[in-house]
Image (cartoon, rainbow, N blue to C red; front, top):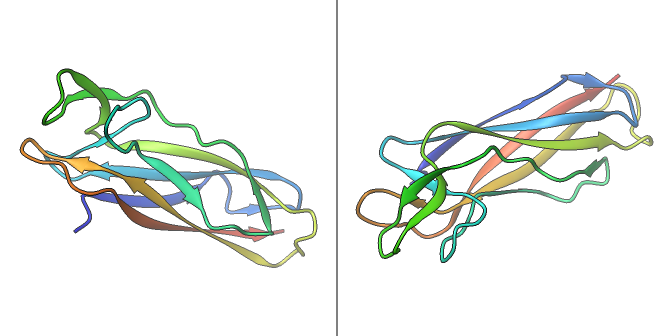
Length: 134
């Protein structure tokens, strides 16, 4: 069971070889669910991971500032997302990619979700972007 939905989009649908574009993963936790953010101790924070692809070079993902949540078994609040949020990941299309090609970039959003009663095992939501090289 997925506890989140992930929608993929890009800052540009078409880019030239050697040009940077931002991949966006819009993450929406289901009602009464939160996912942990960086800095959460004893929990797995949300991360985005790309499948290796020679057609791109990826940069460092950017995550929004998290809210806080109370975690089962924890003595305090932990950084988490309970509302929709966007992960931004800059990538550069390799200069060797030919014009007219479509670059398919696959990856996953890894996360640990919890509700008010329990925490679920860390899982992944697949995500795919397509960029046309012009």
